[in-house]
Image 1 (cartoon, rainbow, N blue to C red):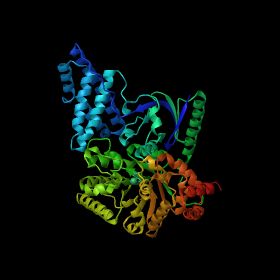
Image 2: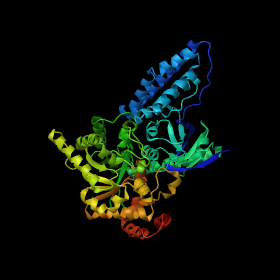
Image 3: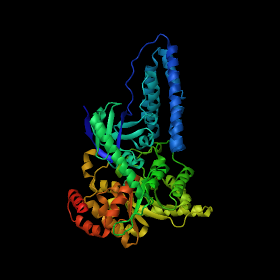
Image 4: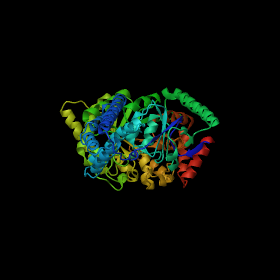
Length: 573
Ligand code: PEP
Ligand code: MG
């Protein structure tokens, strides 16, 4: 009989495919067996290494083709590990010396290396343990004659089921085969959820421990419009979900007719509906969905899933490419926002007990000017290719903004003195995602060209509720009057200085929030590409004038539930 699970609908759509259980954990420890003929074991081991190399090389090649050379670098490192005498020769020696089976020798040597790496002071070396486990797990799978659970090697239609997916796991998904994913933990604003939306990949997160029991290879239905997972569906359920999937896909196709229409309310107010992107590969989806621009380019993805910092040249190429492809439409590029749940192992940053309250985003950049200046130079050099806006994340106080602007001005002056052209009209803005910045927006507004409200963080800091922690996910309340009042405060402050305000947190694409945001005077809404057309259709049915009155009424209410009910009633009135 089928079984039904629920979770948080993180990226809409319906998928039907076989479950692929993905775990980072190592395989079970093999038994020690004495062998009479060590040379057979040596041969088995060499053959397994050779197969692993062929596979990794194929993954490297396809990653380079799909995502570029930088993303493929990690697999070069994996190939090198399979030539490393510390691993390979040590296994061969152990087989010879102790006359043991290859699996046991590999397990022992891997264990020793991993333990040694994990005891290192350097975070970067500690992180190498995961690479050793990955490579050795692949060799082990060949020795044991079973498939290796690796995301990059998937070659049939699947829905991934995992405890969690890191942003770099998500970056490796092969969209030819992966139809969606389910995770046990996570929230709508965790980065795997954001990535799924930008890839237009159906996803359910926070499905809880029950997801761990979904057997590998079982057919499952992922209804990521409702947050429901049906495991081993009956014939009737399958037929029902196939019909729903068809209807959903047809509606998505139908909305595409709005892709070349302007974003304008029923009473003629124009707004900008922009897309959030994480890299060059997302630009096509943004354009396909008729985005009026890019309201947030999360550049940290350029820094992730690799072993060293991206160079100025690599970044320049990427930014130039995005600006060029957007053909003069506004592109807001956010400077590096690392920290929180986004780590860069190769920077070997000290562990923090509260990473979301620590040295993240602009705080990190101001403490590592070398990293910051490289990015700013790349941005400035690319600026002549289109309409660039530069945005600093996580500004709390004016001093940070001033320091960031001063560094930007220095880099501009250096480039100009080198005779390198830089666009004259780059707008510089900040994300408002810390309550202190929202409360002080009238002061900050004098020193920026624009604000973009980052509600994913603004809500977490307003509610003091970790956006990654399921146990407090009930506090993620975008329509809570406290949040809405902060939003209003920011928009008003910018208006008084003649500046514009956008929003690039997930709330901007939320169909319940949109009427209120339109009414409060938000000028730009930036969201995952797949949300642009539903948002355009909704805005086309709303009167901005009416909603500016209704939003004021809603802000007088006391709870998120009351606001939500109010919006729903007025929308259907
Ligand atoms: C936000 O905080 O709302 C935001 C857009 O930034 P991120 O989700 O990347 O932290
Ligand atoms: Mg943020």
